[in-house]
Length: 112
Image (cartoon, rainbow, N blue to C red; front, top):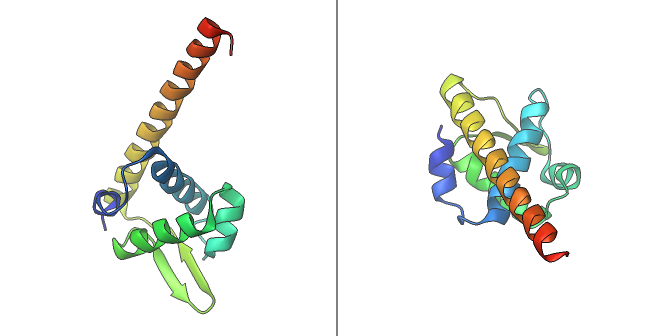
């Protein structure tokens, strides 16, 4: 199980990181349930195809468990994966806050 291994297989862009963050936060909040991709996409307001790709990579890296009938995914981390995930989520939140602050400064400076 390695979130790092999964992230190395995904594009390193803001949109993908936001999708990974949304998927992990949603599945972490619903640990006891196997949730299908469509439900994750709707609940997180993410593109369903992007969510499917991210979930597939996370399953391949054994970050998520999956069942096939009906298809569903859940997050049941061991202690190391839980630490790795919380570190990723904290860093994503910090990057998002930094970007938001930059946009706010720009708007104040240039009146947009």
